[in-house]
Amino acid sequence: MPKRFLTWAVGHAPWSAWAWRNTAFAVAGVPLALPAGFAYLMMVRSAGHIPGALATLLAFSGLLTVLQRSRFWSLLDLDVPRAPLRTPWYTGRGLMQWLRAESTWRQYGYHLVVAPLAALAGALVVCAWTAGVACALIFSWAWALAPDAQSKGWTIGYVGFTFGGMLLLFATPWLAAAVARLDANAAAALLGPNRAKELEQRVEDLAESRAGVVDAADLERRRIERDLHDGAQQRLVSLAMNLGIARATLTDLPPEARAVIDEAHREAKEAIEELNNLVRGLHPAVLEDRGLDAALSGIAARAPLPVELSVDIAVRPSPTVEAVAYFVVSETLANVAKHARAARVSVQLKRVGDLLRVTVTDDGAGGADASRGTGLAGLAKRVGSVDGTIRINSPRGGPTVITVELPCGL
Image 1 (cartoon, rainbow, N blue to C red):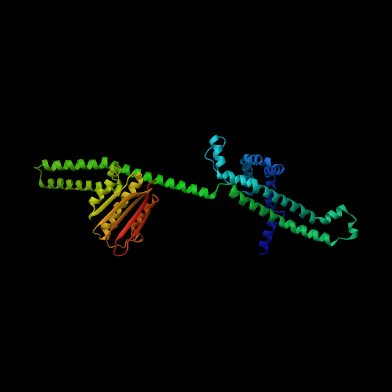
Image 2: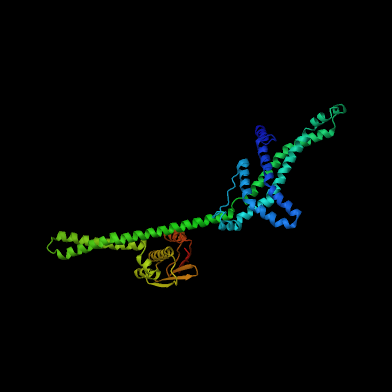
């Protein structure tokens, strides 16, 4: 403990680099406050000078901000980032944007209020150092200025001045540190970009980036669907037709050969059916051509239980939202057929303002819980990919109501 205290005391002593760095920083702020001081002087001299003084300080605020950032970086190793401007300030549009920018007026407030106060604090630090040195060396001054003072003896007042000067010398570094810390906090809040605005902009950028990724994934699914439909699927259809023709025309083949052709024909037709299901699961062509009503009608017709479908969409949403709504209904009907033991299902789609509301209701056993299965959890992730919401109301004994709201602005 004594060694640690000694290290701390030496590092924070008046002669330490820490003390002189903070002092230099405080003093360096004095000349940068002169424009504000000149503006205040003009205001005091005449009320008519107030607009001109304020406008002059505003005109120099950009240069003063650059100098203040340089002061913080060179003396405190503190990087105060610039508030970005999308258009150069020297253009007409850029100048208007600069005048309307919230960061411009925060910087102006720093130069108008904080910089003069920091300069006064810097002057106070210099006065404290000067008074501390003068009081600590009072005996030296008395000896140098009045050599005969020794014959009269040292007064108690001299001892008090010396002790007070030493205390002031050890307290001034903390005063300089306090000034530097307060100035740094004010600069971080006023000279740099607004943290709340910066976070808001980053959230917007991330939302746009995610929307771009979702759209790119949807476009890729469509490309794969077209390639499979126009390539592999057509080849399989041609193969099945050729096998069917061979089975019908080659009647004189041995039974073993006809059995092989029959088996190949059957497997080709099964492969076509599986490929159709795969293509439909990637992105059904009818969805892009005719919209949700026609695409969901096909799902309802293929469902193993009666489905009552109602689609009320005056204006089609974006392709990405349409695809999400389609797969939501498709996966929900698949889950109902597998787990709900329902007799009927009702599917309703309605556009309410900027939201596409999808409601799926079944009269099954209920008890659906997204935390216990991957089906509903995957459904929630798919809905969340476009900033949608999903609500599941499924009490024991039913009915189950799944309500999905998708923003149509994407």
